[in-house]
Image 1 (cartoon, rainbow, N blue to C red):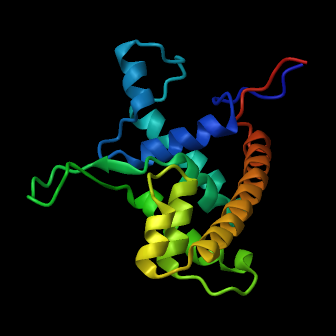
Image 2 (cartoon, helix red, strand yellow):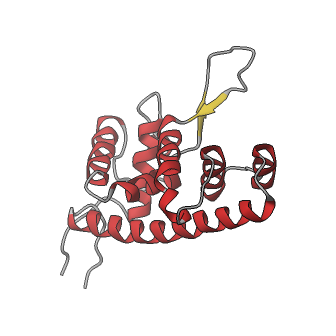
Length: 190
């Protein structure tokens, strides 16, 4: 018996699709481009207005889960960089994706309780969070630049990573339940 015909194979696929689609300046995600070219796409019709609508529905569901969980899923799933066409001398052709940047910035303040009352500099917490989500950051260099002793830096980084790991685990569980309940995940015949 089939419960519903969702469009995504997993909750992970759904949030990645929505974050990638939302990050595009021109309303076509990489997945949609594959589908349009007739590549190895799924044939689910996620191009043009259909893709925009589906992305919007996923993002709307994302707002129904715990706020910190939402931030963690966005930080994990959104592209970290996006193309920049400004052609200024200071530009490398890439800029921070506002969706990713805002999520990590807010998490920087929300991980403070994980430090159990220890004082921590915001710039250091941000570096640890960005590294956790895949940025190439040298935590020891950031700590040295801020004058944080190495043992203190490692202890704080360890607490932040452990906290994020636990929050992320819970976030994925909650997110799957939310999307499954909304009928957006492909169900298996039982």
